[in-house]
Image (cartoon, rainbow, N blue to C red; front, side, top):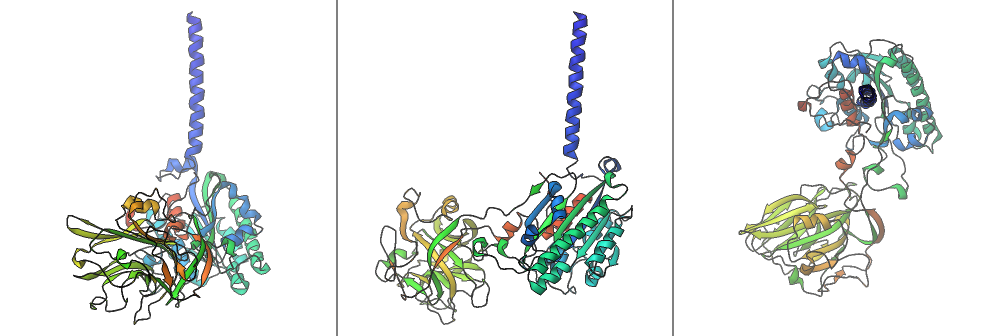
Length: 575
């Protein structure tokens, strides 16, 4: 019995040791994919000393790179975090701004380089990634290879700058730099794709441009071969980042144009972050939202629709609770931007113009555009004022605007919501009763300033109650009103504003207060655009940006990141 017991114990112990060994190996494999937080030497010995190769290609539009013959880039995808829809700086005025984004991890509002003028740079406050690394390790060996003297002069500060004649020379000299055993970080900068794009266009339909991308792919292959030929490559821990500084103009087919930041070919870059320890992770275009499809009237210039036959008094706000909501899709105005000077969108007052705070005959309310944002303005029998949303509307897609007014403990408050999110609130107690003899209008209100919009307006709803924040959030990006809406009994007017019938825009609400257009020839367009799409900044944060490159490198090289650095980038991991 004792012999049997000993045998069983030995078997159990062997199984336990085997399980521990398997788990340990599995944990080590998983841990090797995580960027170590400490700079301890034993970590370097076990997982390899971290090093970085950064390859920047100017003018390589992500979609064009994806559809070219890029065998070398594709060969590293199985061990890469990658994206063909990564983004450059939306507000950059020159490529130098994007270069600086890549090498600082902050945007132009911090580093000060928005165009090709470096005189106002703030690189002392927001240093280049190379300086961050040297502050942690003064012995770090780093170099930049570029055919651009400006790139070398501005960025090779405190590190080795290697001037090249052209992209072929960049390739040769980058391979030479990688031969140095003590090198820690090499940056290779390529410009031929940008040169081709400027000459013919940034699309593969132009053979010269496509050939420049495929030539670059071959040069990347040479550099990767040089990297792998290092005598200690297998004992090192290289991160290879290959990206474009910016894209370039190309015609986007209508069926691919979603009118968001992802349909701006100038911002369309590609990003590949490769290391043998990564598993493949593709970062594609995020979900943008649902489409709003229909025939919509254009409220441009002096176009309007008003309530000529019906009960206009219903739409006085008085001292009562209320909600006004509608959808709006702005076009580019006369200044070729989405910014407008105060045109009315929906309102009930005789006119809307400057001196509104001094004119006593302007009693009523209006919701109007202001720059790229919007404002609720009103005059009551006791006072006047405005509440600014301070929230930019998305460009070229449908936005939902909601204003609620409610009174609690004698204080009357309006709340402004943009795409279901609270933008601003204000106290309007001192304005008094907001009643006007004017007709309810959508679109242009008479003014002496020439304020006029260029926008589609639809799904206008007015309620005799203040919708709760939760209800606004739930329903603001939906179309129409269903009978099971929690405030259905308070609906005063509901105008889809889709199409017309003998100059009428019908009210689907309980009172049938139909609107009449000012003319029978207002343009009507068939639209198929996103509703309540995330903002450009929100969308951009969902894919790799040039801002992320420096942050990724700092993390890989185990440089402790400080909150005071105010880096705008994020770190991407493979799982």
